[in-house]
Image 1 (cartoon, rainbow, N blue to C red):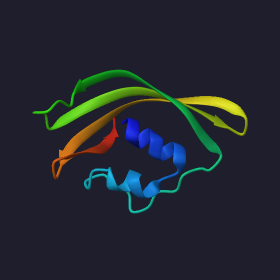
Image 2 (image 1 turned 60 degrees about the vertical axis):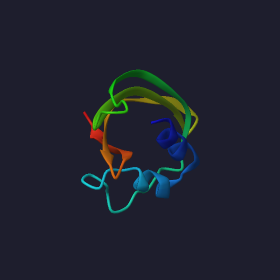
Image 3 (image 1 turned 45 degrees about the vertical axis):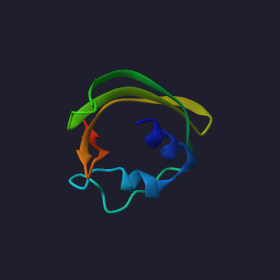
Amino acid sequence: MRSRFSAYAVGDTGYLLRTWHSRTRPARLALDPAHRWTRLDILDTDRGGLFDTTGTVEFRAHYRQSGHPGELHERSRFGREDGQWRYLDAE
C-alpha cells in the first residue's frame, strides 16, 4: 500500500499498473498532475499475512489540488498473483 501511494505521489503509472491485479487492471492510467499527494495514514488491515491469499487495507490519503486540501478514504482489497501482492479494487 505504501509503495503504491509513493507511486501516485511521484506519478509512476508504470509501477501502479504493474502492481494492479490482472483481473481488474485498466489498460491505461492517467493521473491528474494537479493532485499532489502529501500523506498516507493506514487505519486498519485485515489478513494479508504470509500465508494469506487476500487482504485489505483501510487508509486515508491526503492531497492538495489547486491549493486546496483533500483526502481519499478507502478500503482496498489486495490479492496474491505470481507470488506478489496486487491491488484488486476498493470495497
